[in-house]
Length: 189
Image (cartoon, rainbow, N blue to C red; front, side, top):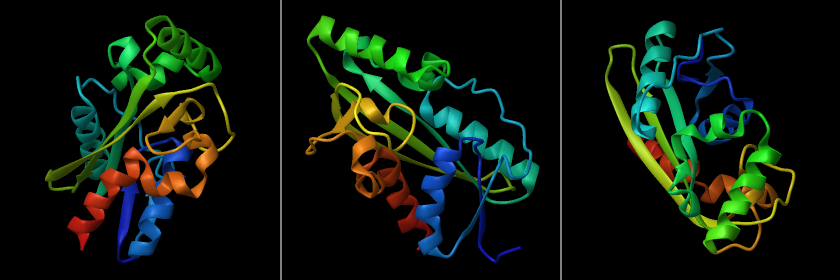
């Protein structure tokens, strides 16, 4: 195995692809929980940090490798910061329907503010962990673009006029995940 290997504790190929592009320049080989057929633990935490830690520890101990887990989601002001930690379940595989509910709530409240939050937890097989949090503030918008995944087509980050789904490689530099990852990269030296 590669001298510097990290296990990404997810079965979400969109997240794996983002982490490959982030870790490769640091000299890491990236494998996923799906590559190792690891089960996904139930996300029983009440926060992004708790869920990221739960997933990272389970993967690190099961694979006996350093593991990184992400728990992230969209927090919409008009929905009282929902869907938040329940972002994937809120969509239930039907993102267009979730987009419609979110946009309708933003219109009804006349409040389009939103933020993406990402908690990254790096766990080692010995049970030690470190957690890093990134956030990107922005606005809800009509769906646009075909890049990215999840809620990317309806989120316009502050300082931009295009959605995450339209920004391509720019998203990799400014996203909530990129901001959390910058902290890990600094810690890894």
